[in-house]
Length: 429
Ligand code: PMP
Image (cartoon, rainbow, N blue to C red):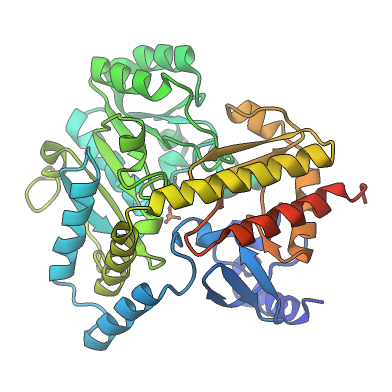
């Protein structure tokens, strides 16, 4: 079983730390040896041992159209033929920037970068320069990439692996990061007021995705908007996951809150390395060359990535039903998973916003980080491995989001449900 994947992992261990280029890919949280992937097609992944899985990871969010979508592949191919990088402006960048500015209510100008980490790092720099303040407030369990100041009580791999504070992050930088509790309206209000005069920004995943999916409680994002304005700090929405996922207008449109700055990634690159940060024109014009805040990138706005992103976003926009369909499939997935829990008489719950969802095992509700981390990770690990045996590829951690794509059909969602019933109903190992 999985012989070629295991052989490759051993080989990888020799030359790559832990054999992987991003920690969560190691399956450390669920045990076992990660499947090495040979190819993807629509809703399916195929590993090097010839096994096929229905994929609910979608490369951790970007693949809202599924794998190897023809329009995206064609755009990549056509651009690659005429050049892969110029280090000079191109028409495509203007087209993508225009599309982003038109779609997102709070984005007047945008700059393209290559990863979500770069986007949040740069947004913080703009916020600090604009306010002349150093402190930032982030929420425990929210992950914003591996930026020094943001790798403090972070979610995603950092949460999964129990490395909340990484060695190598200078204490003096971590000291500038104030922590809040996601969805704690009163506590966060008090923290913003307490640090007010020194606070450059509050950064938040408007729908938390990196402690598993946790939607904002009514009033939470509104409070952040009000209180940051009151103390003169900026509000940064990290929409790297939620941008074009929870709707064409992102979380900012869905919840009708205008942040000062927005970080984007994943979907906007169509599966290629591409991210962005943007927001109010007066803030973005602080960036060089118009302003003094330095930020740059050899491959920023890379034409192949931009072509892929544009193709993906245009495909999403082409169909007026896109987000209705995604929500419908997400709803079906939620129902199937809930029914599987009931069938198995297991405590658990499913959180969902549109096509992003998490089934938490062992807890009745999850509205914040404390409740999320109360879930039964050992049971999740067993569940993950059994789902894999059933041909369903889930995120290899309790604290991640599953993503439904437009390549999934109701039939794939029913397969998910049937597999979950089987995987949960088996008596404990
Ligand atoms: N912000 C959020 C909300 C994320 O989920 C991620 C990555 N999963 C990042 C930022 C960092 O993006 P990247 O991995 O492209 O650096």
